[in-house]
Length: 359
Ligand code: IPM
Ligand code: MG
Image (cartoon, rainbow, N blue to C red):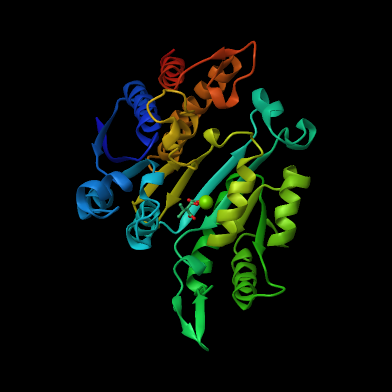
């Protein structure tokens, strides 16, 4: 029997509630396909700080490095807002991304037909939207140096450095082109090349890489225009390739197309075994313990793990179909509930998805 080790980093707030459901679903998949998923829980974020005085303890990092994949819930709680920046829960995310070399972040935004009308945008604009954002995750102004706050000219001066090596651009571009090849073969690279030198290099390298993928139609867009086009006509996009900070912003924007943050999974991949899967929503500490948050993003993150880490394409489709069936049958958590449908709690949705898989 095949066996995989999964580091289970539930994190803070409602992280555990949603990862519990993802685990339930993965175990059902394991049963169906005779694969053994072994979960190893460790602390990350604020809860880790409480115990270890650091949001990313060594034991967590080691477990993540040794595992075949990482399933993460969410980090952060207002409780920790006053901590110094180096030990804030978010630091754990940046740390684990860098340490595991998770340079490629896939963030799909898919509008399900059952939910078209819950989008804040008009149905005719969003229906049929299926975008994959490929965001570079370990470079850019997030990690660039020099950085800091110091005194210059007798006043405080804050600075960061937006920078990319061509090798960093090349490897993420290859990921995006390969993703595009599996989809509709359209790639839009987003930058700010009318102003930034680093973006001019981004374009140059992306154009070079494109020669290896003649079937993919490559276009370029400035980030301000892209922010507008995602709202104006999201269906024009298939795959979007962009750097760390533009991807951070555009992926939050795109997450509103489907109508709820609670629906969107993500995968962060390296060029080796290391990979991390997490819902893109936060930890929602105010909702903790109420069994109301939507586990679908976490469940679909588990599905992405099946596809990208374990090559279990059929199992991936099973989970996606099971989620769609739950929605079709009218089950809704509070964030996507409408009168006349069946209001369900976090664990109930997980149970329904699980039984759909085993049916
Ligand atoms: C994300 C988040 C993180 C980021 C924060 C929490 C550090 O916004 O995953 O998009 O900026 O990358
Ligand atoms: Mg973000």
